[in-house]
Amino acid sequence: MLQVWGRRSAFNVQKVMWLIGELNLQHEHIPAGGSFGVRDTSEFLAMNPHGRIPVVKDGDTVVWESHAILRYLAAVYGGPAWWNADAGVRSQADRWMDWAQCSLQPAFVDGVFWGGYRTPPHLQDKEVLQAKIQRCGQYFRLLDGVLADRAFLTGDSLSLADIAVGTSLYRYFELDIERPLVPHVEAWYLRLKERPSYREHVMVPFSELRGRVEF
Image (cartoon, rainbow, N blue to C red; front, side, top):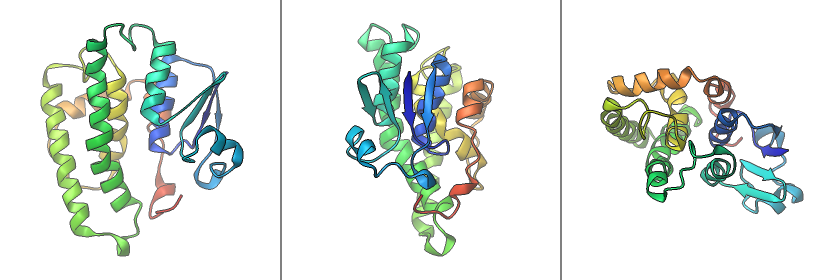
């Protein structure tokens, strides 16, 4: 059976769990990270020398890094709907996955969420935080234009692109921050919230993380 290490409130773990839910895969979830510990054990470090979550073990195969896990699960279990045989078609999702990791996530997760929500007010760099909020606004306006003529990022159906980018939406819209008007993004968010796996694995309360720079 597929085994998954991580904690439910961890952003990168949520991406993986969302896809596992979409694929309806039987799995064992092993809490790790935060108050659960585990990451510094010799057994865990033998699987991932970086000591980071999530980690997935599928038989003799161990995969770490959330987007590598998404691609692995899609390739092994997703079929053509998730892993097209045409590399050009697959690249449509790949581009958004890389953009999410290299652009959106540094601005929102590392910048706004960590720099604001997870950092105690007296330790926040307000100027840097505001700059990150503005950058996020630019990114979500970009997404709004892309989503003006489609239901999901690569077309009419959910793909790895939506998982990589869409995991941010719950926290983005829950935080008390300045946001631009992005009606197409909001409509996309409503469509994602209709999916049981999104509600179960992404819309997870995160109040335990407030003001906690180490967890």
